[in-house]
Length: 270
Image (cartoon, rainbow, N blue to C red):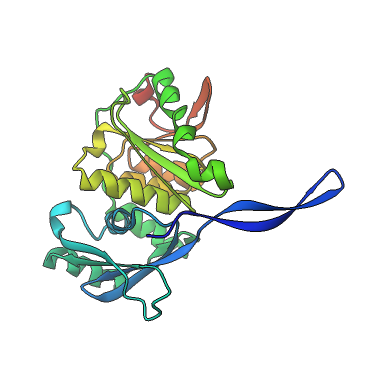
């Protein structure tokens, strides 16, 4: 498996002086997800947790609804260039999940760059079920969980170029995390980990190192996560979607303060 960091020479300018020095650079590599051997999706990602990333992606895309719909999942190197690292995850699905994958070609899809049409938003809102959860957490407890996020951001500390997502139980005894180049991949990786471990998403909160976009709120809702908290702000579309899907959004969760944008009762407010 490739390392997530690579040391390369850079030229650093500080206070009028130039110095050549080595620096740690985050590694970006392609990962192809195949379904029954057929190409399905190409993701640019940070090496590591490849099977979890593929599983989480298929889950948050609505193709896989449960781990039981995955027959096999293999991470293998099938690139024609032998110098390239392993970069393929091949997934065998049950017939039901495979049919959802086929229908996906007939629907409007979205990418990490944003939704392509208003019709896609309307389609998602119609087809995604609201979150069902009785989970509550005190604001200070949620802030304590957020305070743990920097401790798992090793790649970010070394490069400044990674996002992190964690899923945690309110008492902090369960704390799953992942880093990646983008928030979407980090979310899919950690959701894939939780799915693999057969965790109950309804009993966990999601913690995010960046902002909350429509896509991040959608991934959380599709997984059944009741609370999505971030160190930065949500967008208007994220708030509108969360309101519709019974998802609590928390932004600017830092040190001793936070903002709640939807369903504040889960944090004992409202």
